[in-house]
Length: 528
Image 1 (cartoon, helix red, strand yellow):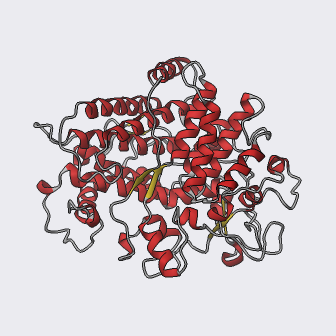
Image 2 (cartoon, rainbow, N blue to C red):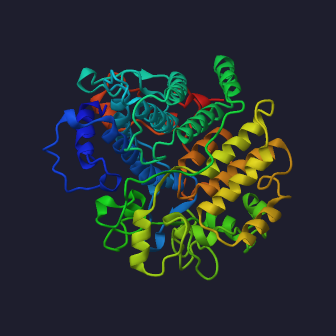
Image 3 (cartoon, one colour):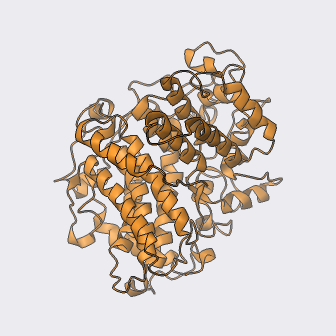
């Protein structure tokens, strides 16, 4: 359990962000030894929690989900046989264990705000925002791992070995937090947080984001039965007429190319360092053949069934998502080596729509500057619209406008990736209209497949973990395994080694086989 280090972690990170001025939250020139705990308030802790959790979401969680969902591949032209553990997959207690460790520590900052002694209610809004952000990242962890410490977690020295709570109870508690956060925001109590690096204190947007997260929680439970299904339906009804977020949810404490520590963490991990050199993962993460075939419209006529619905439909986003080589996206077939099928002589990497968003740099220096300063994306407007489309498709008695939200999700994705030619969007929407599983046509199952497929494209390189969860729940989008795979896609990850060392009396003993089968260790919403 990381609780042993939580207090230290909260303080040490907080010191880097101790200034109230947003553009100095990443000022690493502050002396971490000269600021006392009495000076660390919710206003300082809020951006700490937001940036530290986003950092891990944008880096190794992004890489895990991108490979698992066959959006990217390891560059076997340079690295020989990369990502073997991902391709098999070999899931162990060291497999992406930093995702749990780092996000769990980051959530501690939100918890510190929530329990902060505030008799004058000065920090009411801070607490509400912390509840919302905590719910966002708790869902990611419990969706990846199932049961986890929750009710007794984040108490530092008061409880170094917290019990594991059931995923069902964590979901209920998180939804209750989202509802309580809205009540707190509606109270209009407390100061407006100057440390709000997401919505700059706009309570209306925070409430809409909370509603959208609540919808995500409830839709994840689409397949549950019994008491949880009754609970889900009651809570879905409470969202009738609710306002959902209608913009990208972005965080930015003042990212820049001043030094590596002040860059957007995605940029420093996948794109460029502050000096303009290639980042550590620049060469190893490239487009997969699977993604390339789809974005290119299967122009070479691959006969595998998964690609037939894409025939002749060139995706107008492709040049913004991956750089083109020879006029198309070039991708590597996961698991294959040079000389084998699906390994071209040149490959495509993340392009400006993913590394920058909007705009096109003309020099390496400009690329470094723009990518370094890019805001981190916690949730896209596209995801919000696809969630609303799914809700209306599955629960038409409560929600409406499924087709309109579906189209709005695609439109939002084109905008996010910086596609400026409106005809590319128009042509794409026209082309997919009659394609079951890609456009809004056919049976409800076809339409669900279309939602998940379009969401997968939209979240490529941004928040791909949400598509991993969608696949676990629905089996869509259809995603080929690597050629060297010996296991199916995992339903969950194994708890990290830190848990088996620090919380051995409570952590469930998950075997490798448990990861790939439906059992009591599978996240509760994926057992049916």
